[in-house]
Length: 326
Image 1 (cartoon, helix red, strand yellow):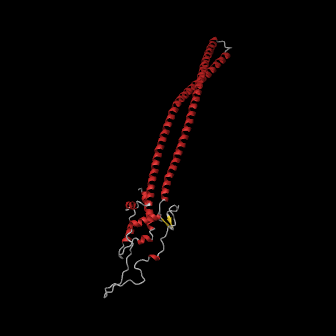
Image 2 (cartoon, helix red, strand yellow; image 1 turned 90 degrees about the horizontal axis):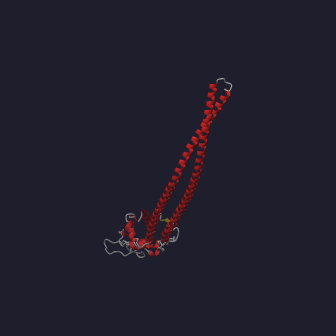
Image 3 (tube, helix red, strand yellow; image 1 turned 60 degrees about the horizontal axis):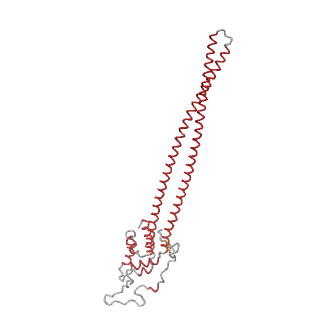
């Protein structure tokens, strides 16, 4: 029996004993006026609560309360087993989720490596193109300066200086043409890199979109399954608890009290009154006329019947007395 079962058992048994009626009183008497065997039996039974739990279980073996407690223990064990199975199922779902996450991570890593490479290539080519553009613009400015120098020296008499200016102009034109070709080449290469990047970017977006669709669908189904498992667990637990409620409906206060009285009764004959004995006349005096030698059972009314029935939702209450210690 679990600790909860022991506590519940003790509380219900204590409440049962507190309802020992007149029948229990008359069943625990002895002809000896000094005898307290009946009273001691009851007190011993009450004071041994937890110590004699096994003994209580033995003599309540056939009681309705005992059967209800056995059902309670069994169903609590069943609920615990269901929770263990649910935990195993959840661990399996967690493992599947981890595998799915690692699978998507590997797929995404491949696409990311390709995109990182194309991004790096695009950045390098863009830098080369911008450098070629700056060089082209500088060569164009140098050519313009050389042309202006030639025009300014048209009226010079020194032919050597004019020749040097023409040579410088020719060199500047050649450098400008070469830088223009290099600049155009880098522009074309950058455009090819841009088109390649754009194509890879579209493919990467398609891959990521498919992964996101798969992830949302997987996660949605996992949550749906998880909620269904929890809902099923609640229904299963309630069905098991309903079995406990049904067994408690079969529990009879009257039968349990009657069983205890029959098992622990010590006798039904109360002690006779002590008669007066004359010292000088050893003959015992007869009992006074009109007085009963025992308790007058006829003067007592019928035994009280608890108002609460076994199927009453307030089963733990009988009249104004509660089985729960207050």
